[in-house]
Length: 278
Image (cartoon, rainbow, N blue to C red):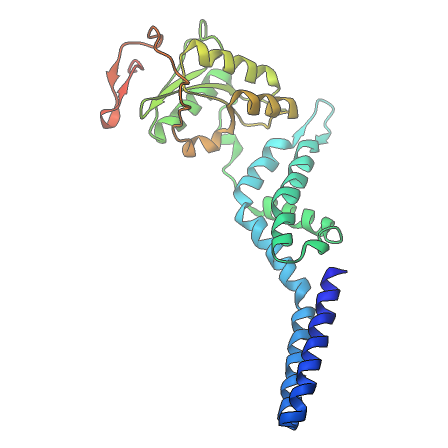
């Protein structure tokens, strides 16, 4: 094993150098060599603890996101069974893309396979221990949930309003901030949202001449939805993440077109907005 080979090499060269020094300096060199060998041995014995601490620190560093993904990706089906397949995939993805590269960078890469179950258990504990807002705060009724999400966006500095139920072309909320127009579809579900919602909001982005598109849900998203969202630049969010959403415009995204959401007005901070005030 690479780690054991490095340990043997360190012990060998330290002993060799110490033995040579002992011929010149006598007993003091032997004592120093012994102390160096003991330090190398103790450092090796402490290796498992350092690895576990690194894993814990990484899991805790991302605990908020992990806890949210855990909530999103676990649900109860129509038969009363708890379905956590999505969370299992997410947990393994985090382990493979974040934990293992960090172990490898610190020289612990060879330990990854042996510690796989420990890594997953540590991620689970970090996600379960992180306190999330009460999910009951979000309304269950569709229109009320849309207004709830719009209010979250307004608290984050967006000039947001819920659209009319008919003629919205898939957009439940249209918001603007810093000249960037965002279209949002809201889904209050008891199971992961499929790619139909992504298709609808991608079409709504063009209809509303928007710069950003997002699907917001209390639940998670299916693998097909995530794949399509990545291909269409649609952001998938939990409603608790709306407070952190910032404006982003892709170069050349919006083209001049007829105003579809009301007359131009000056919003907070002097930003021009085409959202009709309510």
